[in-house]
Length: 411
Image (tube, rainbow, N blue to C red; front, side, top):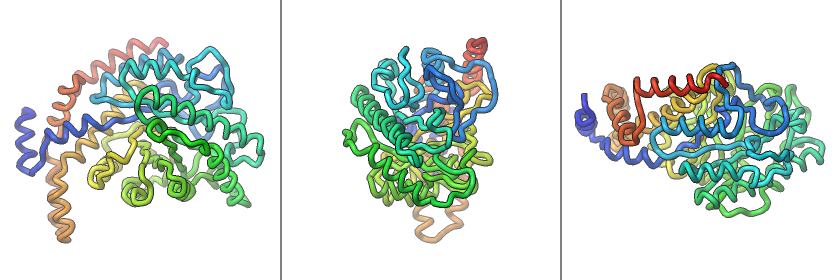
């Protein structure tokens, strides 16, 4: 079957495949740097990942330097149709200097900006509140010790300045996402005190205004993690309230909720009260295990909600997974393409027809149409999108991924 034949079949349902392809071209996805090196980073000192973060496996080919990581990223982007972004953590500085977290400056990340300009990429940024001696208690911005809080406040303040300069240099808003691992392994006596300290610390950290066209603050919640099983200070309710009160972007990470919660359902609810949402698309199995995303129901529902609720222009889409048991570049390529496929599925829905059926309480029509659509030749539309973007698909993609992996396996 050709694309033209598939296009005609979708047209019978009132679906314009050309519109879907053109719209998909405009949706950037922020690919996360930490998949490429198992969340190790490039600071000139050693340390554990911490914060409940752990990449398992020892597949050959882990990037050990910024240059190796950039080479891997360039290959991965060449396998992904469209124009995208890179999400960079503060532990991925590129410098011969050895600044501590409260001493980092834009110059320590300038090589990343130069590279992003060459590649035509936007950058997003994150302060790194884990893998550091001052985070060993799984308490940072909410720590009872004012000196430790001040250290992390200064780190966060500097990342905002760096992110703003990145946004200015690239002419593209840089989302600076705040996530802290703070919590308790056993039930705390005074949750309120910890949350008051966290609120006050973030208030101080973001008190200096930045140009919103250059940098946007985002705050990210979590349910629990290793070492913080009993209480996470920065819960969903905490950050939902904080984002509403302080007009920050609200980050919803699919791995940071109970596995039975439907994050897609939260999008329309949250969007009534916050202007913008940052999505971290991930795949939890038992907790925040950050598996590479599949074309699964939860990811498809996320994409459908973004399209049906008209949230694409108010949502920053990023990815957050890391798997060291498989080729890291393949994980990037397939995971990002799966997010794009989910979006294409959503763009190929006859929304007017489905909305009309729903308003009329004709749930049979909604059910039948939704299920019959699954038999339409989606793959031919996806292959056409890849071809127009000069990206491989199918067996050709697999060959390219294998060939690259064989070249880096000796690292």
